Image 1 (cartoon, helix red, strand yellow):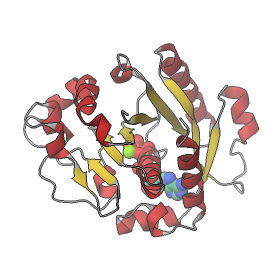
Image 2 (tube, helix red, strand yellow):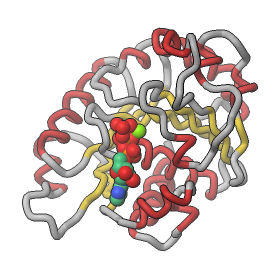
Image 3 (cartoon, rainbow, N blue to C red):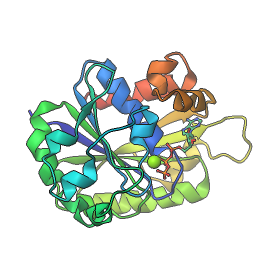
Length: 240
Ligand SMILES: Nc1ncnc2c1ncn2[C@@H]1O[C@H](COP(=O)(O)OP(=O)(O)OP(=O)(O)O)[C@@H](O)[C@H]1O
Ligand SMILES: [Mg+2]
């Protein structure tokens, strides 16, 4: 069976796409799945950093530029069942052309789709789903923080995704802190954003610690509030 593909997206930068991507990929692997995480954010790629992976030879840029086949740029992590296709943080000559070829990503992924149960794509901040437009059976998870500007942008992306035939699984409301006055509640968000499913991930200082350790928090601190949030999402994703 081909892998289920989930793209993690938000129009706003810095809301937690990479944190969500690396942790749901990790949580899905703990649940016994073969998972590939792809760093499709070619501009500010941090997936490898979040896994503490350094010194890899090939990257997504090489695949998109036709230098190598996709299997050569997939690296097994130290965690069973979890592999990564990184993008290059410090670009080589010619890497810049890769972003124009991102539309071909799914052609490359088709070649290895049977080798995984889930493929998680981290992405750059964007309101556009152009690179998903011709892809069948692709799912997205929207990510937002509980503040109005981020929610309004998520609404635009939700609309654009559905209009393009992309299946929106729901919204990950990240960095929820009930003590912060002025943060939007789930009910208020549901009024703006007509979305079936909202998962909450708490604002959790342990996330920074895990980042410093180069280990997803679901491995590094299993009982932390954020880990519980990520594990809940992963469990729900099993049934898509
Ligand atoms: N639930 C959380 N609790 C505390 N800190 C968090 C949480 N989620 C993310 N962060 C922190 O917020 C910052 C931005 O997160 P992240 O890099 O995942 O965002 P992003 O949306 O991928 O950013 P970009 O748009 O640059 O790709 C990081 O320092 C991360 O550690
Ligand atoms: Mg990111």
